[in-house]
Length: 162
Image 1: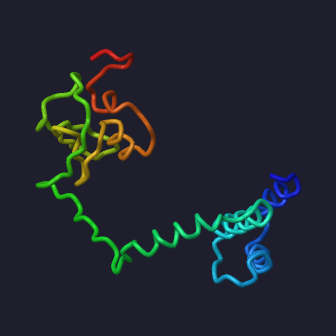
Image 2 (image 1 turned 135 degrees about the horizontal axis):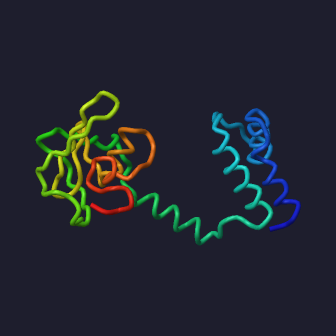
């Protein structure tokens, strides 16, 4: 990449959106409705590089057109999955841990005046209608910060001993 081109591209993120929109119009020869700064920076940087170092080859353009013609246009957004209910939790694969009680066991802990109950599942842990991959993930959801789930729920003593 040319040194002056690299400097020009490096300066793009420091521009305001209005300046980026003007730069976009100068580089592409047309205005843009976008106000997304990250998108504008990427598009302008791509165009500057393409102008300086060469654009796509004709063969690449033809292949892209072929792929676009073969693609099925999406007519609607994909359907969202139903949220997990206590009767039907999604299956999450978690390696077996000998320190954990059997699936079906309910771990109970009082925390800040609230009684927490976590069900040990075959592959994960159910808490408040969601399935977590680890006890540490449950502890983080409860406390807001990372901590050992085994320590938090009393399955291990400090120092790593059960």
